[in-house]
Length: 371
Image (cartoon, rainbow, N blue to C red; front, side, top):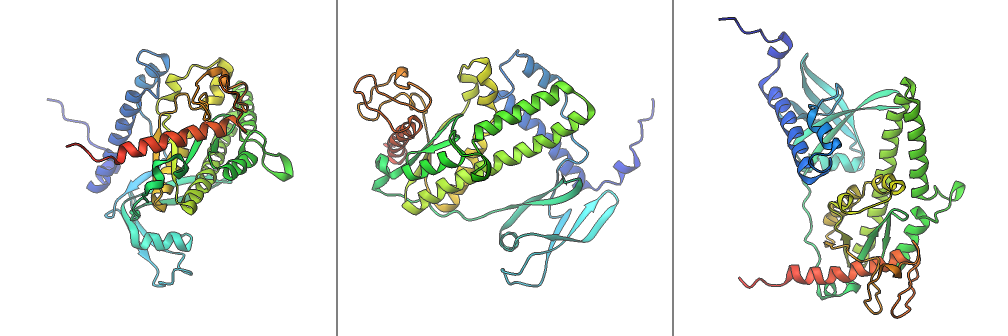
């Protein structure tokens, strides 16, 4: 009988808890892959894209995020308890070369105060290159008590909701007119460029895609390096826009005591049929991320949020209820074929329909059960 191949010394030196974390990381990665395949994110069964994903094993980057629990990473806060001046402390981290102690960390005072009182579970060590320098970030899980979502009779009518219409030309437009005009002027198709503003989000996405295609055609080592840098930059830009939009919507809903209604866009990429020039534009924005930001910000503010069926919200007349795809004469114009009603902006009319459906959805969800 042939003796088994001995384990490498570095593996033998790995602690049991660290080994468990590595196993859990691999298992979670394959669980996520199976979930994405089941939801159709990688295409329908038999498609080239899906077969390519299934044929290759998951690979982990050498500088990828690594989870730590309290046994492998311990937090030591400074003695200063003043929340206005407390900006950090130190951590002790287990490594394959031994435990590293007294590693200083820093953060904003409100972040440190939240870390002191509400940290729960694992902490991820993430490495990022910032302007050529490798910087380490600790991403800790915190449990924050959420206030109860506000209720009331006003939520049974459309006036109690802020409808949010999501789109390609304008990322988000609301049924609240002042807020809708603000979002259109800041990030919409008519947003000013240059010194007066950063321009339309769609135009910037188009420019980014054109530069990306040019670099991909070049296919040199330096072009690939620049593509990686630009990919991170584009992701930061999208997250920043989504944070700003969601923050404004939640703040207005909290100030006025209304709820937030958004479209349920689950599986929209598989359901919608688009011409080839439209596909890249339609799929190049993280609407799911915007939905996540709206959800957690609304929960922390005690604002109710519901998801409604988006079918025909852009074609339905709010005056007479007539539905016709010809009502939408252009991207921004709406003229009802039945009663002649003209909307100030087609996306705002879509947001009105979403708010109207939110009232019915809320009434059904809060209705007493017959059981």
